[in-house]
Length: 382
View 1 (cartoon, rainbow, N blue to C red):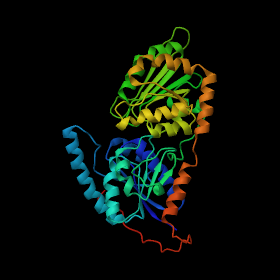
View 2: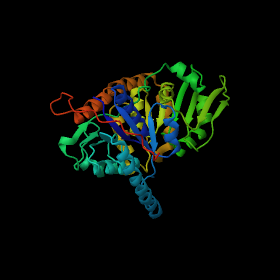
View 3: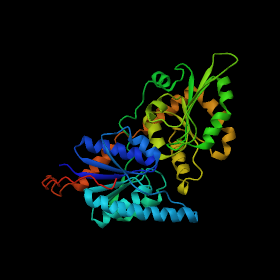
View 4: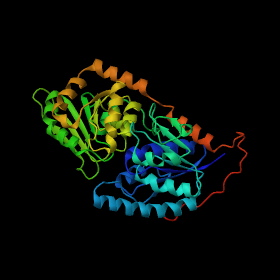
């Protein structure tokens, strides 16, 4: 039987990427999918890679405690709610799946008003506001292993990892480095501040380029949209040929990016960690200190405890260069991290979600005897 799914997953790559992964799995099983995304440039850039999916940009902006920011949030959510009510009424999905963030709130409420089942997925070790608020109304809430929410019924709770897009898999390191414009035979450090970049990590990379060049380490830094232009630098050394450094505002080939690295310095978003695990790439994580509820610190601590790499607080960036050079030239330690990452891999997470969502919609007798819902026009409110 084929069902219609509405996935709300915009605002950051950490929300959008798993939404696309779920859409890939659902369409492979014959279902119809529409994805609600934000109006941010980062969503538009990533969506360009998947022209076969239906993406609907919805109004809205992130939460802020600042009085002016809070008022803008309220007004934008009101617009988003009106938009979502009309879109849900036209689409009539069989289920709405929310991946958190500000794009989920209005769509989930609109779905409940139309008596449409709701499923929520939370990838962070500390659940976000949207999931905490809406979880009690959902038929399913998917949480990371061992994480629980008091506001969510035990019968509605399922544990599942973050679904990762099909294209995210380990690639040959030499080919991945050449694709980035790096030397395949030299050590490679990747700096990745998430889909929106991280100014402190970008600045740290530039401030240490000469030292990395003298140590024989080439650098590729993804700065984030609006945080610089594409640059390829050649840095001279005293004992060897030039060392390359690449700065680029956006990279839509995360698998190639992480496969090129001996080591990654990154923020600790759940999406980034899931992709590091899938590519078995060791990392030093620098949690974003202003992340809501400090969830990145919790993500990073779990990653370190599982043996995938190390964690450094942003206030100690002064010691990061020493940590990087100690790890990147320690082949035994890198192998140990990669082995641990391979053990952490949850390749079946997507299948867990797909099976459970289909079970949520299947008739009680399991005979798939319910009539197939009629097709609905795509919303005219895009």
